[in-house]
Length: 397
Ligand code: 3PG
Ligand code: MG
Image 1 (tube, rainbow, N blue to C red):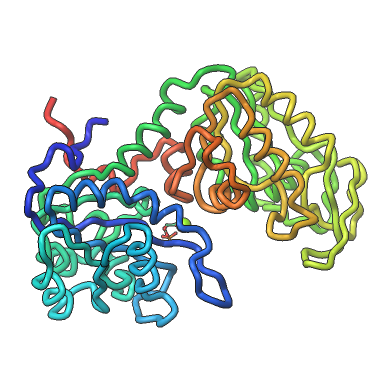
Image 2: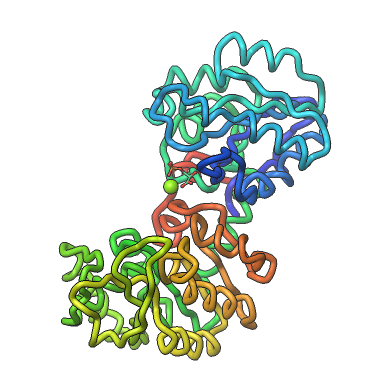
């Protein structure tokens, strides 16, 4: 990577502000962290810095508190969890800037760790406000961006702060860039992308950027309905992005011009409603009833996708194949997650819900790389430069 990293900096005894992405999923009822992958992923950077005697000041957002304090979105549970993972004290400040944060930093010793309060409690964060960025920066001597998952946001703690401190990438950011670049720059062929999730609009950039690079495009999930409609199938009550039908058509045309095999579902599971008690029925795509919704791919589709994936040396997957949260509509997603985990191929999993599924199924270790970025990994694979990465200085050639 051509960005300066923590390894290039003189860290010893410095106060280091580390922007992490601790935006972890929380249980709706208990508020407990349901997947700590994003916290674990920052441990290498934290340990490296504390081993060099740095005072590590961690900063993150959690959820979307809209610029005000939301009790349920404080970072205290994250600080406690981090403390358990590290087996040492982690301090926590109920403010991210101002006298309370300054006092907490002043009380730190070499090797100490402090977690600042949810940075999005301040409206200035999302506005990339210069004064706010400067105040945050004033807490430290060095800035490290290890928040790959938030690097597609031009916010104060991601972009603004780099104006006021010597800045560099952390190990997680470095690893994400290396893994995701490898599949867009030099993938081993055959290369497939497996895409699902609710909306075509989230994936258009990915499909367009991968068009000249992949050999297979496999489409499932809610977004398949728009593609099926573009091929003149009736999709009943399924959500169709009417304004993306033309886009879907043109993507299919481009795929065929580029000799890419684009596979859509040939059978689907349909149901009256998306609810825990709903019953699914499998039908061929020609026979989707007018009063039902598509909720998963069917077994023939899974097996066609399986056949294609067996041939591949590289696979990029983002987006579930059905309504994964409802067990009876999770079969397609689960079968393909298993398939990917058993391939002799480079398997890269886009973050967000896809990463959570793979982690929940305990398959993360069997994949080549599971990104911690949801929107960020899609932006990256779409070929867009992420503002948080752009803001970091390049290594001298
Ligand atoms: C994410 O989970 O996508 C990142 O943490 C960024 O959060 P955001 O989508 O609320 O900006
Ligand atoms: Mg997001």
